[in-house]
Amino acid sequence: MNDTEFKVATEQRLQAFLEIQKANALTPAAAEMIVRLEQLILRAGKRSRPRLLKLTYDAYGGKHSEALVDIGLALELQHQFLLVHDDIMDNDTVRYNGLNMLGYYRQEFPQGVTTIAESMALMAGNLLFTFANQVILEHPDLTPEQKLAVLHILHETNLAVHAGQQLDIVNVLALQPSITEETLLRTDFLKTALYSVRQPMVVAAELVGLKSAERKKIDAFARAFGILYQLVDDFSDYFSNSSSFDDHPKYRDYRQGKITYPLLYGLEHGTTEDVKHLRDNAARKNLTDEEMEQIAERLEKIGAKTAAQQQIKRYYGDAIQALDALAIDKTARDSLLGMLAAFSGIGR
Image 1 (spheres, helix red, strand yellow):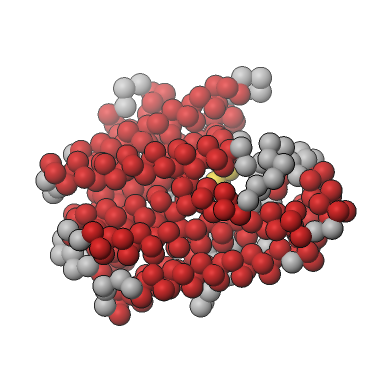
Image 2 (cartoon, rainbow, N blue to C red; image 1 turned 90 degrees about the vertical axis):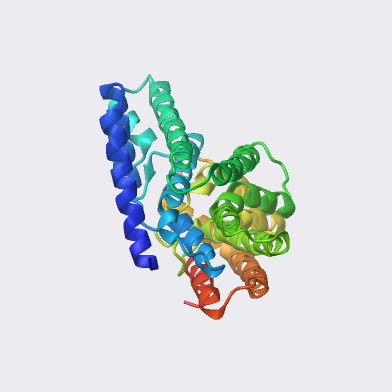
């Protein structure tokens, strides 16, 4: 099964799985929730975690990629579970150029009872978490030992993401008079790198029976790639780029007062006037797009754009170095390099 066939199979399995869940829903409201989840998830297109799972599996000689489809489905369901909860925490109502779960339920329930919408969205996320575990437990081609190992990896990852999200929630100017780059990078590693990159690679490593030494090399690559992934995402919130995050909604982080690398650099290297302006306007609810563009321009003049680009290049270089250490052939290396290029905008 080639990459294109695998993506098509994953999409078909995702749609079929959700159709079964709709048919088996215990109440009309539960079925409607799954309809909305289906509308949300099928708008997304990259399926980068299932793809990274397959690339890693193939790179190390895996021979039964058709068995990966359901595992890829589980990783995608887990990803969507985390995004649904992330949107609630960020009070976002849009994802993938349409309403997310919070947005659907905010639209349904009148103002003044928004906790109902938040509760519904929370339950939708919980449902996706349940589905992800269900897919692994019911996988027809995994041994009981493999099922347990994969579930353990998912469990370990969810714990880490939970810790990272705790750090991220309080990472706002109103609560953090100062924050270090080290803390930011640790947050990025826990909330993004572990589940977006390390988890699919480690699951593949488990299935092909890789030794501990090679898994450590995979960890090094996943750490650099995962942090790079988040740094590019943060960069995209202020500045345009040529990565796969070009369609990312702009200025969300600053409007929430969230500290990411570009803002941190501006606060550390700006003039007294710059710092006061950046702090006074962060999380201002009525901040216009024009005012936000002026904020981005101010950060660029301070040097934040150049510094963020240099940071991205640094982690890209670390990822390349770690990639070259993996015991894989040139074809596999080029495939992983292609993902790096897509998510970083470097080499495209």
